[in-house]
Image 1: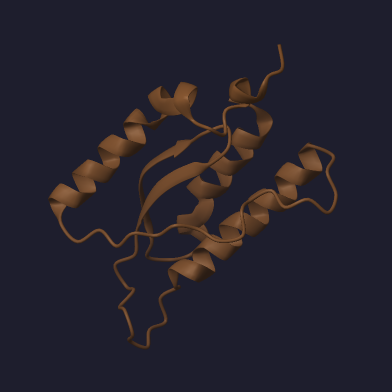
Image 2 (image 1 turned 90 degrees about the horizontal axis):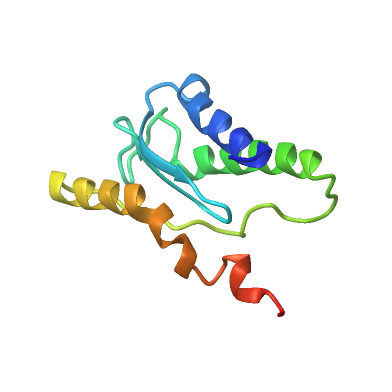
Length: 123
């Protein structure tokens, strides 16, 4: 793993210290994206709560990692992350297990990922 990946991993691991009540589950840091499962037991859809929202947690995660990674890469004015994020509410154990399996197997799919620079090499 490179330095940017180490930053992403460290910030991910530190999220429960920043946001009481959240729990981290399976995750994988890929060369051009990240997958992670976060358990937010205090969050209730549409209900007033003191628990952080997913948007708040992701905003902090992307901000901290983006600033640190751009500093590491000596980049200015370039977004580290895409503008939005994909979320999926996990509703049952089967869904959770399917997503965990996808995350664990994701690195094996890197060779076929359109974002893999190997597909953009000029020979």
